[in-house]
Length: 126
Image 1 (spheres, rainbow, N blue to C red):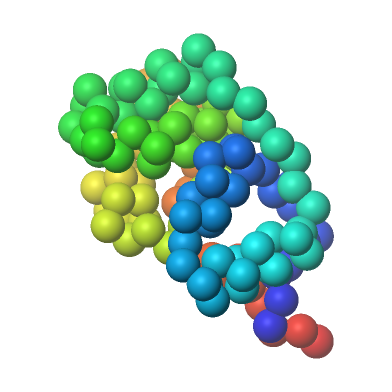
Image 2: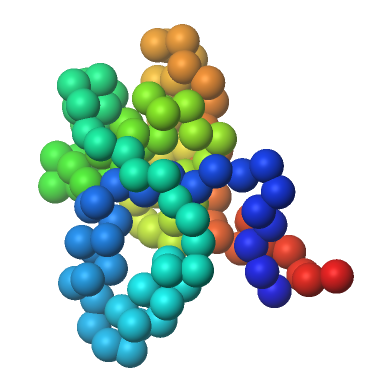
């Protein structure tokens, strides 16, 4: 199985690399190996990303303690990403967050962002 890469640009924040670095081995090594095989565009934070992240908290979609997840959402919204890809079912890949992010994008005139688990973008090699 491999990631479908046609017409897809992948973005990341330095925060993602920091999160992976905090994982224990062997998971950390495995994740870094996967990440090193993919070309990414790095996104820097800005005031608009922070504003959207704060809106996620203000609307009760996520809590202040989940600020990093809110920054991920804000980055994806402001960068007009099609997807947020996450294994985080507790805070990200769930109906409450998906509907909340959809409300924010509609309210502020941004494109919709789908929040999916990685297997949604993986296909079998032909």
